[in-house]
Length: 346
Image (tube, rainbow, N blue to C red; front, side, top):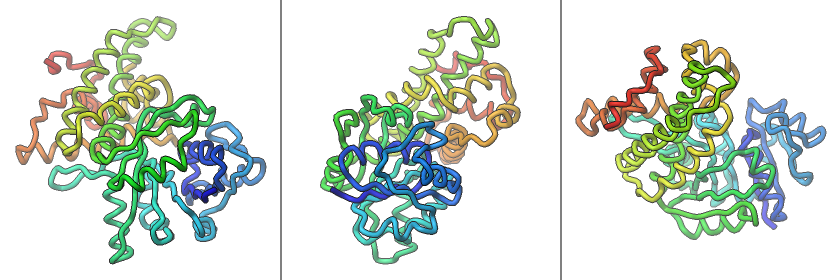
């Protein structure tokens, strides 16, 4: 039995307590500074108000001021924060990581550099760790692939990838977490997998535009238009492939992003905002409708396109290779019509 501490009581971090607990490990779930109400509910009866499910009975729950106690003796730390919480995790959680204990990140995101570069979350956290604890190295891996928190909580068959620089560490983490329903591949292509699974949020919004445009034209009760969705899916995969190449990742890692794109289109917050924008609801109004909801799709679109605009200025890329992504940017930043620029896909 191992001790696995999850920092961040959000939906995916909490969902990972299922395979960890099912494998007989001691699981400690630590809330961030924003999770006090979640932890209060979990301490009371084990019910997670966002997943709307009871978490495994043997889990232990901690407010963040108790985090130092929760990480003591841990064999694995799981970072369960969203992309909006990365800097918080770096500042508040990294100093608490015990020496030599590996970290597994569930965060999906890319950070734009002033030179047009894109940095993965693991690379950012490694850099922050070395700044906070000079002379020490952070062993960090990440998880990516088609997995919704709801279905993982329900123990539905799921296939993901753990990516990191060290194969031995990846094998160790996989052995801790894999079950008969949670299947884990491993890869050392951190850039490729992290790019693919981050960008799927932006492109899921793009595909969902077709859903909203269909509603706008034919009404709520009309059948969905799968031809247009499939075409946008294909263009999304094409552009994701180009982005992976730009970051120096391996083409084969695209499969995890494509699978993740597929599952994200079928429901949740990304589909919702894409549908609203496709219906012609302005971006500000759509954000007001979804107030309080974490929208990774908006964050990654802004971050990635900011980097690509700078890269284009330096002649590193051609923006015409990313017509769908830049279309989403225009909708978000300039209030452009959702009408799809089909001819730009040629």
